Amino acid sequence: MRIRGLFLLCISLIGSVAVAGGVIFAVGEWTKWTNATDARAVMHVFADLARLTENLSLERGDYNQALLTEAAATTKPSTQKVNETLAAMEVARKQLPADTAQVFNAPYDKLVAAIQASRALADPEIAKPGSARDRSVQARYVSNATALLVETARLSDMLEIEIATDNQMIGKLAGLARYSLMLRDIGGRRSTMLTSYFGNPKPFTPAQVEQFYIFEGQIRTVWSMLEHASSELEELPGITAGTQKAKAEFIDLLGKRTQEVFQNILQNKDTGFAIDSWRAFVRPPLAASLAPRNAAFDAAEALSVAQISSARMAFTLAVGVCGLILLLVLGFGLFITRRVVQPIREMAIGIEQIAQGVL
Image 1 (cartoon, one colour):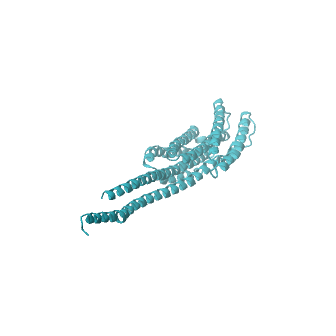
Image 2: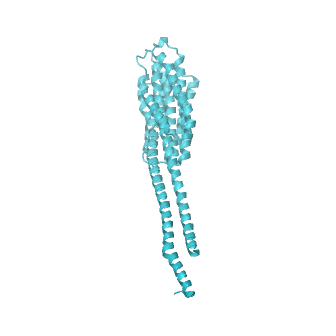
Image 3: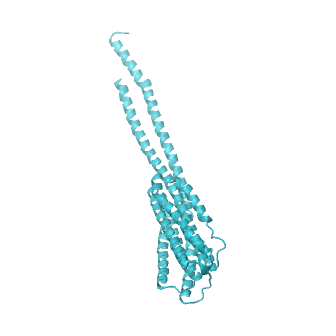
């Protein structure tokens, strides 16, 4: 019995160490799996919030143009894209981890209410001819719409922190997307300044001139950060191409043309643009500023799927190995008992019987 106990003790110790190692590995892979899943869910909401920012910017431009146009609007500006994004957000945010949803939902609900309030402010005025409108509404609407974009940026920052906590690489991609969104937002506000001028051509005040140059400085700063973030992710597909597209169309083309138009306004020269032609000109370059964002979202989705698949497979393998080790320990224990311990025991009994003269 002592021999049997010694063998089983050794086998149990070896098996326990092996199983413990397998369990630790399995727990690590389970953590990677859940973190990647959570990061993907948060990234989906982050992406929808980014699209909401883009569509709100376009809606702001449409409403601003309607408020600046003297004729009464026969139809309201389209709100379809924003509404579609809000509907997608309702689906996506149900997948958020509980702790993230707890801090996200309340401010997001306030944001949605503010969007409706902003529309309610502008809708009655655009239905009137310019002479009958409250002239303060246009400035209030632009201010409110800008505040909405600031609030969406704040929510995006919060989600980015959650993503980076769950998955560092996905977090870097979220950071790149955020810089791209900042470019679009600042570029949109810069373009809105000129749109407002074309709708109501009054000389810029010193404060407005200063604000324009602040926008210029902010764009240069954000672009530097975006380029740095892009260089760290250049091995991922689409990142470099998206950055190059943003540089060619937004930084170079739109940046140069905007400067020329602004200087012509300051010098009271012809700009070559009216409100409609200006908005038509700026839309494609503003969309190009989001090319890094789109590339980051595509790369994040592909990376998340790969990481989830890898972690799930590794976890399944670890659980299978743990089960196999347990079976081996049990099988080896039975083998030792039947093939080693029992024959030795029978031999010992036989020797003892011979010693006692029992043949």
